[in-house]
Amino acid sequence: MNKLEQILRGFVSFTELASSSGFLPALPGACMVLEQIWGTVDQVKVNKERCKVLRARCVYIFITIRDNAAGVEESALNQTVQAFVTTLKGIHSSMNKWAEWGSLKSFARNDEISLEIEMSMSQLDGCCQNLQIAAQLQLFSLNTQMEAARESDQLELKKMMLTMLENQEELREDMGLLLVNMEKFTDIMKTFQLELRSHPAGSSTHNNISRGLLGMQQASGQLPPIAFLEGHECNIVSQAPIAGSTVYDVYEGLWLGEEKVAVKVLRSSKASEGNVRRFHRQVDIWHRMKSKYILRFYGVASITGGSSFYLVSPWCENGDAPKYLKRNPNADRLKLILEIAYGLRYLHSQNPPIAHGSLQGSNVLIGDGGGALLADFGLAKALEDLTAVPFTQSTGANGCYRWMAPELHEDGGKMTLKSDIYSWAMTALELYSDKVPYSRIKMPGSVVMEVAKGKIPERPRPGVNRTSSTGSTTGGRDGIEIPDRLWELLVRCWSRDAVNRPTIQEAIQELEDMRRYGPTPMEM
Image (cartoon, rainbow, N blue to C red; front, side):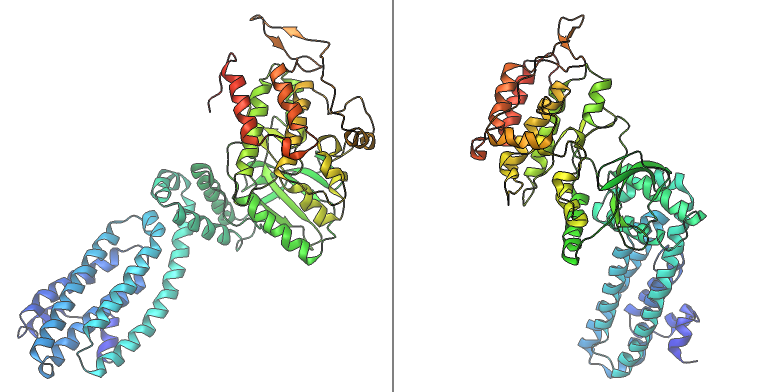
């Protein structure tokens, strides 16, 4: 067994090292630091094997300096010893810091520890530049040991992760340590998400990782970062669809084993490779969007066999806006259409701007707090790409003609921010009247003809209104009266020439002004 192997196996006598190096005044003190480093390594929680190689390198360089001092010019020797002692003190300080960190903090800052180890290795190598080449050859062997140690540390890191996930209560208590650095937090979520996929669904490890991921999501508001799911994050629990359209069915699902979610399953996919790639880009956009006025998008997965996809989003117990208003006729409708406008503003302010493309009441869901959430932005075109069914036919019996801007009825018409403004105004009309736009016209095709003639919807005059105890008008089965100022805004939004329609910010300013004089000003 050569000297290097003895050091790596822990056969080191610091008493002997100190007594044999007294001819160089700085080395006995360095030997004391070495001994402290040696003992501290065992208290480090992560990267322990690499720390052991690092301490072995420290000892080996100490011996190399001692044994080669006679052959080195004095000033160069002093420079080498000084650099070595300074490096040792830095390593000792780092080791003490790492030893004090708990498991979760060590896990979260694993990359930082790895980087410091690499930097220390480089600094130690620099101490040998004035020594004999034999030392460099031995250090090459230590580099080989470092690679093996790195693999061992990765396995230990994985074991540590699974151990942490077994103690969910402790993980929740220490979550603040992870939230300090959101970039690192996201990396850890990704690590957990990938690990989830390597364990069978229903196993205790799979369940532990699922609960840990869900806890991190709830504590931070961050979704697991991989939007392309593999069936481990979500499973469908309802036997039959609970809703749907001509191209998809909606099922109830469970997200990470606990959270109730809505799962849209496409009935079939006839997409070309190019359309699938475009759909994947759309998925990335959906997944990035985060606003209190936008329904989050959890992810997408291929159906077994790859014939189709399903999309996962939060479950909204209150349902969509029209159904919610049927059950809650006294809800603040001006507040709802303003929140929808806020959602559009968020989309329109992205770089590049995002057009919703299919805004209507059924695409506005109501959150637990009664607020409006925009859903399915960009979905109509994505479904057309995937299913080859025109988006005008993919939203049910009413299609989307009733909400579509006139320019979209023409061949080659493109969804724009201005066409969204038109649809927003039609949605506002729908929510105030409790009826779809052009409700007197039964056939969607006839609606297209009306729009082509430049006719806007009739202003609804609810025949059944109730008066509350405060004297204000409340909703009935026929909706509520649309104030004059709001009606004037809607009419401008329906301008046949898109240039004459207001921007969403201009519409918001008017709506906020209307609310400013209302009985319950909205918190902006």
